[in-house]
Amino acid sequence: MTQDPKLNAAYALCRAIAKREAKNFFYAFIALPVARRNAICAIYAFMRKADDLADDETLSREERRRRLDAWLANWRRACHGGDSSDLVFVAVRDAIERFSIPLSLLDELVAGTTMDLEPAASNAPDTYATFADVYRYCYLVASVVGLVCIRIFGYQDSRAEKLAEETGIAFQLTNILRDVAEDAERNRIYLPLEDLAAHGVSVNSLLHRVPGTPPTANERALLEAIAQRAEVYYQSGWQLMPLIDRESRPALWVLVSIYHALLKRIRRANYDVFSRRATVPLPQKLWILAVGLTRMGLARLSG
Image (tube, rainbow, N blue to C red; front, side, top):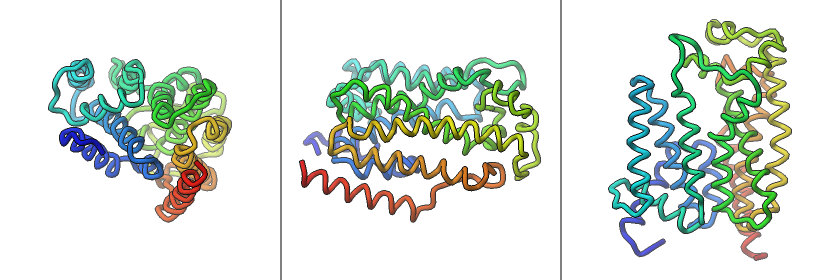
């Protein structure tokens, strides 16, 4: 910990936010050394605030964008040396200086949250035409997080950057599969329209289904196609492991293991993401964390 009371308070707040909100990420954060853990929690808290501003459906899209722009303007003043009463900004500014995180990556993080605030035709669902469009969305909301994380994890080999990008794609495709029903309730379809057409699934069948109705054969085939793509990208997560600093590898192992376990649960449920929301049970998360902490101890002994 630093000797700066304000900075200590800032990191304590970010850790509390991460512990409360980061259902899967926080287990990986625990397996990091303190300085890296603090930095990751700060980035998460920054990302969480941007998401919350963008997702507040009690407000119009225009008002959400206005509030997000005002928050971002305050952040830019803070990160260029201006005084800030926002403790999250205080922690993030320290983290980016400590771990040489480009400000452009944080700009991309915020850009990802604004994609759902683009003006839409009245009552028209938010959709993505092609997988390339979905990939771009996944890149902004998840891969950029991975590119920030590897700066904190530490790496020397530039191959780590593409692998971190693709690991983020795997995570976000898993989120998309898990949240199909929830997103449809919010008038959003993140499955590519070209894939819906290829599997004979209509947008209306996803938007206007009877709650809890299990998927049809065509819908299962559609979701399986997305899962197979995710599986390919998960291989990048395992390939990334040896390219980051030894003491950070257990945290990455925990993170990839938990997210991959979530995808496996979706597949074992035969893609019935409509009857109940897929989750990784707490005992399984704790077991994965225990293995990760053991790996962390071994890494320190061998370091």
